[in-house]
Image (tube, rainbow, N blue to C red; front, side, top):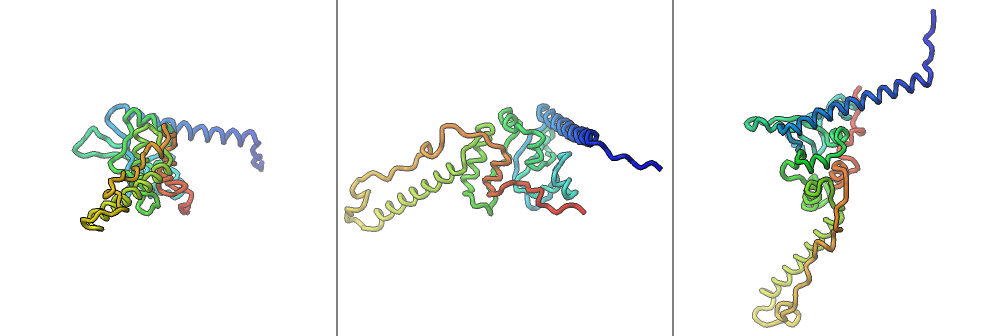
Length: 239
């Protein structure tokens, strides 16, 4: 009886190359289908906040959570919807993890500039994030406004903080002027002495002239206070 001969390193390497090549060809084919749908004008790609009351499944052929667990359930706070807009009476579409679609279509900024990728309404950080919701909304909206570019989160947070303190200070001064000392002028009151208000913080002092390029998945992870928005490698493996 002849025993099977061990494979040579070249044979093993060739198999790996073929497997890698097939994966890339599959990704290219799937990406081409999506691009064709978008260019047809019958579909649009939407960034959405994932509803908590209704389960959605990622349709990517190479969905990493599916490979890991056997289930392509989208557990992240965000998802993509490839929406069929040709039938307005009953809109339907397919859903994707943000990172799964980003692997298929790395240049999402081009889709934004061409009008194929948009926000589906109000998009913000998760409620349990430490990031100011208003800052997260502006940062995400700017990414779409500037075609894949936005400003550092600290710019939004610092401006909001200082502007909020300025508004509170102005409000306290005005209330004190109206109610604090009646009709008698107060030498310490800005309004009684006709002194100028403290200068309002200017946005231009907090933001650079040009926004910076950033991956959408990285941006969403930043406003969520996470290292990765999908975190599929933490999921329990299928047994």
